[in-house]
Length: 255
Image (cartoon, rainbow, N blue to C red; front, side, top):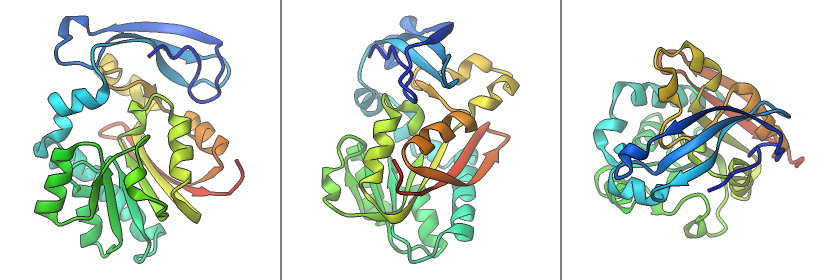
């Protein structure tokens, strides 16, 4: 995975910031090392020149924390889910059709159900997570994900949720455009990501540039991305304790 250009504006003009090296942990990380770049054109910060030890799908199947129920039931995850649910109650009608991409075991969807949203669906690449969501939470979840949405057919949704996913995606612009194909005419996208604008406030700065994350979004850079894909910002909520933010975007139809 070379990534020589900015994933937002496509510019090859960049400044090298520093290098991350995880090669001493090659058995348990997807990326052995990468260089963190700042785009000179739009300011996006991203990982390039990535040396892989395994694909992300292999990594999540083998050893990722994201297949651990305790991760999703943690205080920080619950707080994010509460923030998203609260935002939906203010901005989204209860009869709206909602899809979460990368829904894991389905705890956010379950929370939305309990808040009165009955038309919720999920798509998740991990078969283990899909089984849990179906069997334990009785959710309508299918196997798949970005780049593999075939199981959804031609179905469209009023809202699509992408929570703590976009920072992992090789081509975030393609991901947004793929989601756009599954939105209704006035559909919305809800995205939650780590807040790169607050990284400097974190006591463990370099931990934010992890062995899994390759995109580092500030509110400005994700706004550039979403505007270029035909979406306008509705609302942004920040989780100051975790240094993440959640943003709701409405489709304008102009791409």
